[in-house]
Picture 1: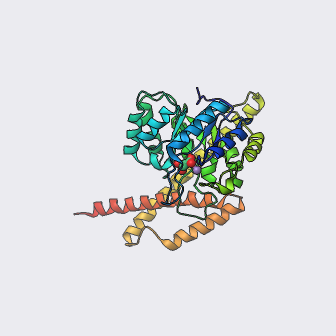
Picture 2: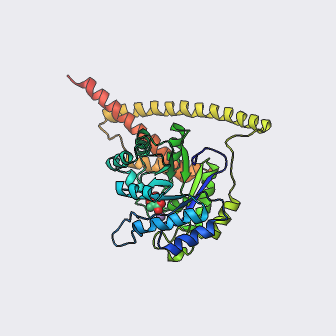
Picture 3: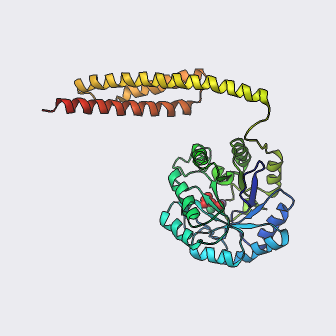
Length: 358
Ligand code: PEP
Ligand code: MN
């Protein structure tokens, strides 16, 4: 079984696109001595704009068959149409994956699930480009309902308009964590290549995925990344992959060290107490919001006061900074708190106006 939950991560590597026979075989040759269990290559490429390289198509299926035979390495491709599935099966492709732009459309996913009904092939489902966990989980369920026994999830990050982001796609780690919470049985693979969009950052995200307990890594690998026909900036060479894999720290889910375990248990208990205090304080803060809502209603003032909100943001961020708390974290936390405070004030305003009705 390919997607078996174990300590050692499953390593998937290969080029973004199969460009020509030589490039495919050269990549496989360079990967043969590395602990790579699955060779990936896109042969039909979903490109954002027309006119870019869209993959070598059906012709490249033979190159992948050569990889399989010559290097005894199972091969995986992306499929987006029922015809892709048919061709993949005719050419003994071992594993399929569904791309982030396909997962976004339930009609499309359902059509692919029906095409795969009764076929026993491992399948990987990338997260949709939007940060929608239900859409991702739903796509996985559609394939499982069609009878597929081996379905894994690939976290490849989420699109963002903000080009100044450190990474090409926002990791939103909380989403794969929530998916794993809902589905502890699910095999979760991280794709640091598409998250970072940058070869030099692949290593740090691959390690982060290991720190978080992911079960596998899919890393785009090309013999000559600078001249790759797609995703040139994020592909790494097989030598760079070797370096990453040699230095990767693999972490365990638990420890047998009883002293450390009891130390952790002690810290968790302290944390439980603090969380209880945080909740009690939030409840007190929200009571104040309710009282403020009443006053604002009586004075016919708006619930949202932009100047006050700026003051809250600035003062809380600078207080947080003094305690070395991440500024983005403090901002996001107070955005939530403030949003709830406004919601409660608006509720109070509604109640009072209802009571005032004749
Ligand atoms: C890919 O893996 O090359 C690919 C196109 O990925 P995604 O669907 O994540 O963009
Ligand atoms: Mn790619």
